[in-house]
Image (cartoon, rainbow, N blue to C red):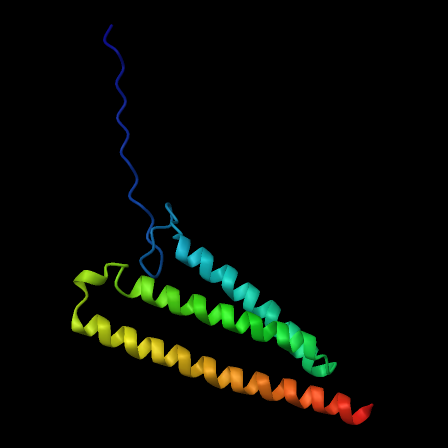
Length: 131
């Protein structure tokens, strides 16, 4: 008696509405990191709002420290992902986009820092007046 051979045909991957392969859902580490950073940013934003509402300068100063760290990390990620970390092969377009992106991040950081420092001054001045 001959051995029974069964052939199975592999099903093609299911393609979602945006072209995603639904069978193999690959999430890269950058996406996971971005989700964690977004959650931490939400938490510190809540701390900032609570600090402003309760006139607590410590909460606002904690947000300012997070602001420094978060923007430094954003700049590092911008530099690392813009040219895949290979600085020697960068074209002029990559350099220009890096400079423009870095200046944008720094400008937003300066604006946010200016606002946070104003809030801290307001809270500390209000505490001195009320004492």
